[in-house]
Length: 160
Image (cartoon, rainbow, N blue to C red; front, side, top):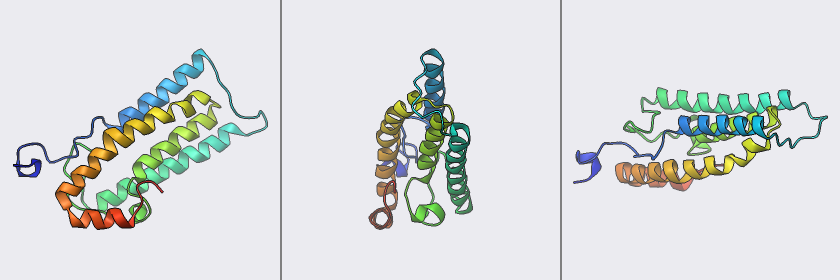
């Protein structure tokens, strides 16, 4: 019996909740910056404004992606069952627009706070999301939707 038939929960089985990983990376980076600042931008760069724009771009992408999933009446949370493969909105261009929005959010914070620590923490954030979340989501969607997901996966890149 497979997980869709009731043996296990009908979800991706993601190792972690992505918003928690994002918050830990952001808080960790800012905490490290407070203890030992590592600026990386030239003083002439309007870091606050530039970082704010990048952060808001990431937030806008995340909101667009979440609204697209909501309109398709499927779950956003990794702990809930996916009911359909969504290939509209930002999902036409990338299979993971919410996580890309999160990456932009961290980059925006790094620029706004001129903190190399936040850039450094993008690496573990990426690795946790890629292998602890995305890999499990992809395997789950392949099992649940078969050829429909494989065709989508062949058409749309994982990231960009």
